[in-house]
Image (cartoon, rainbow, N blue to C red; front, side, top):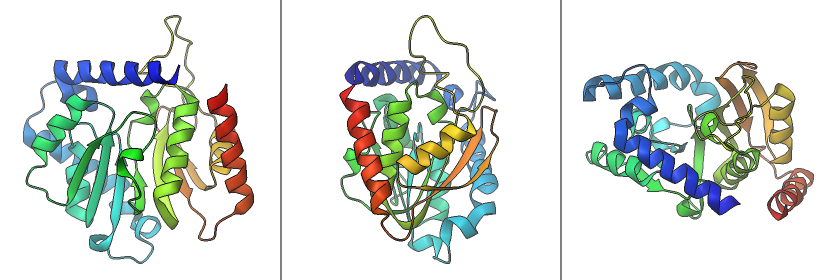
Length: 243
């Protein structure tokens, strides 16, 4: 079942990338110029990163920080992140998107892009990051189990005290008769979000946009290692992936 979902996500996002990659990344425009496309990524970083540097950097020099981006697409936000931070590690399930990102970021030696399998971050091995970010990505993942697994994987790579800032789909969705939808994803309530944080070892410190498509979550990794949370996360993972 998990392999089928991985293949579905990969093939459908490859198809979208071939059809019009930039439109499916940012649907405000169907005919982006290079400048407009990457400037829109800079605008996102200005609004969601630069206004939140206290939570993100916590006194660190951004140029000495390693950051992770999940769902980098064609590198729209990756470029903007690489202009602010020391190193950026970015992943996407679509090989077509990654090919475009590598071309677009060829002049950014501190931006490293990888195709992952759509459910975990094993491709990054044991790289340690100071901050993790994802923008309009988890809204397209049609599985709570996969989203939970990504959150656990970020916990594994994130340094103690670090922040994972990301969005989930907060709006109510009609069930699709055709099965998992890689465009609409799955719905999360505030209670769902807090439960996910706790089960994956994080502190859900802030939340904005509950009930909307852009439900922002601030998950902080505790500076210590909460044994109880880690055991809960481990056994929760076993239950989910053994079903």
